[in-house]
Image 1 (cartoon, rainbow, N blue to C red):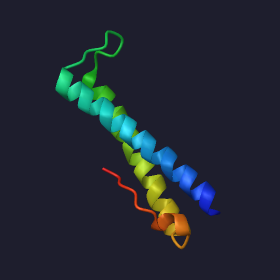
Image 2: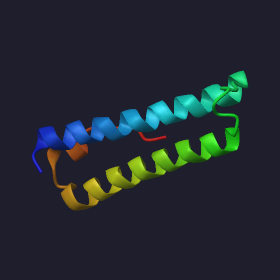
Image 3: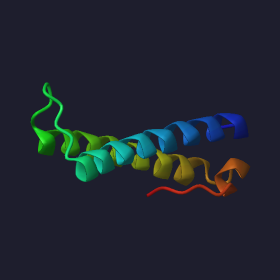
Image 4: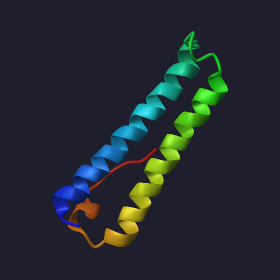
Length: 78
């Protein structure tokens, strides 16, 4: 996998993780209830699944393409 592709995928997964974490934080801090999504625990569960899948993809990329220079760039997964 070339560096640009690796970095692009990494950014995609990190953005997905950040988006999901932000939504969970918003539910938690603002007690947001969206009329068509009254199952808050179900919504949080879906967001946690999205985070887990994205983190798994980052781990698999690092495992199989970890010698890639892009892997050495500093990234943060919460």
